[in-house]
Length: 566
Image (tube, rainbow, N blue to C red; front, side, top):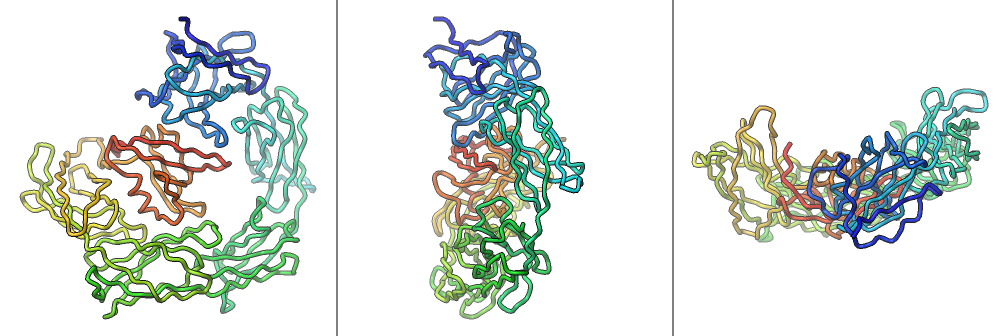
């Protein structure tokens, strides 16, 4: 049976894709650009890109794009000198489309299913042009920092740029069918500009009109200025409708929001009442924050006279973003009493413990505006133990290896540690409930983190560990996981790093992605530590991860964990 080939004509940007016959894909003997040398998670995707006269297209960037509505970039490769491309590793994507572009040309396939029968694609570039120009104010002054974007283009072809200090911008490879552009500038509102479709370059200069600002302030219940309070106009529905106060409690918002109400919020206070933006120099009064108080007891119900308590994670009542979590506070009281004050309304998870004990996390606690809860009892889990023998790569016992729980809580990083004995044996007690990790460190040897561990209360988990000697230029640490680093930001728990070549990278995750679910469980109210433990695990095990990306993209992938060497 002849190999199946799908041809994408140059009549429209996203040409109609032919039905996929159940045939093996056509494989050229010519060298191709590959996204990865790893074994494919699903079928391979390959093809070639041509010009409208059928010649191989040179200098083409080819992107594998996820399905609607996310249109997330899964992989990118460069076509070779014959216009050929191949995505050998398509991660866990089940459906996708291919987009090819270069200066002056752009084409996209229809969405298709990725499997072993995916045929070879033939993509024919259609014309595209560059749009460039300058943004200036009515007095001729250059407008820097203006966000310029194409509006009426397919999601994978939307272009966005920011003007430089001279007000210049450039949007490359804009589809010929795109006919409108939007410019957004702080203090100058939003301007929409019609495009005429000129090729190969279209000049579109933007004229902006300065707006007056709404100048206001935010104070607490005692009338003192509040730094880093968030002020929202029009319920935050429009771009530019949010501002944060400076050290003096001052804020500015564009005058175009003058018909809206303003509301201020802060992690240590209850929100203000709405204030009309139309009043001169509006002042927003935050209300007094609430508090959570109670006792810390051991598993026998006895008060813990010295304990620590802190905010592990916080989900505001209105669903607004928050970065609240931080250092714990130590309490010394014969009755085990504690109080955490200055809390905004929302859902809290507390971290708590005692000297010599690993940090533990409370159940979610709801707190109303200005509410003072006094009914909280935090019980220290009895904990199990992890024990075993640590050896070098020759099987000889290693003494004085530091053994400690790793990332048990976001608000308390330093955890109790033990040292291995002369025979390499260790016993680490006080294991927290749920999934946890244990770190092994010794100078001159590769550090290792055992992940995905669980143990019953007062139980014992045996784990022997081998620590290889450090080689010149070799990895210094090893942990089972996906290869992403998490941090709490104002938009949620965010991937602040994705290490190249790791499972997270191969699955299409990117720096800046916001984690929304792990194994089907929403991340709302979960801390960085809790989610770190959920993503970690033994090499070969799998985890399902869902993220959102700036611009509205959504991606859900199943990732096989690996040993991450750094």
